[in-house]
Length: 83
Image 1 (cartoon, helix red, strand yellow):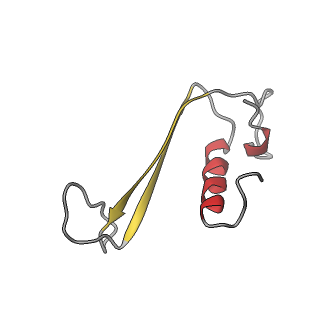
Image 2 (cartoon, rainbow, N blue to C red):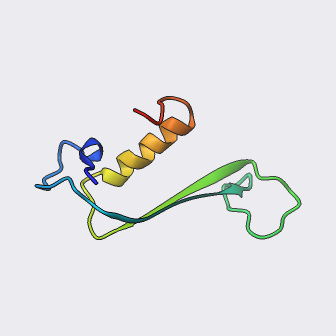
């Protein structure tokens, strides 16, 4: 795929075409101290950790940072998925 939209000005790669082999997004609750709650807990978490994992043979400079930023902005309603 052409990831030109997610490369930064400092990217020196000649070709913006990259293949993402795997991308997973998971979330889990955290306790008041920011530690993940694992297993069965009766107490509710006070927040959430969002874990984004991306596998590829190569990335563009700041590509993943910009992709995650776009996901966050869509998630909070700051931009639409079509942008």
